[in-house]
Image (cartoon, rainbow, N blue to C red):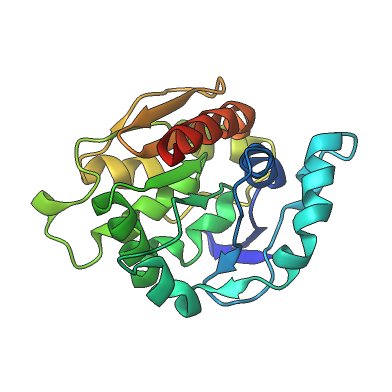
Length: 231
């Protein structure tokens, strides 16, 4: 699992939420898109298996189909020359949620380069729940006035739940070192949702969802948007 140090010094063992990863992939796969799996380190994808819906046939089907790639993903640095090439074959980048996204992704220059390239080249960026923390990477080495996603409207997991319910129920062992929504607001990103209802939103080529509840809706939105663009 991915470890995050909380404000109280305790370690939070986390990863990607399986539904937030696998259900959007299910829709994209069903639409005929080939999916490459990559991590910063090249190490296996870390999933919060406690949240795996064991009786959900669609999620478990796609998990088994992509398990070899999840166990042996490509290292992101090895894809950079292809991803950012003028003739890049990639139509979208998908960053799933889960608190594991907070460990390393927002500080990654590689992730920032990928996001800026996709956005400036009219390709899609798809993310949900805590996944929009990845958008912070696009601010690395950028002037605040030139921030790629300044003025964008998004859905994201509410800071209020990370400050309240997630601690109260014992899911998190303390307060996070920083809050996703607060950081994005500082950069001029507009957050549309206050709670979690499964809300999704598309602003230009940026597609976002508010929580695991948005996984199905975001998958359908993304599949339809990508099919329309591919036509």
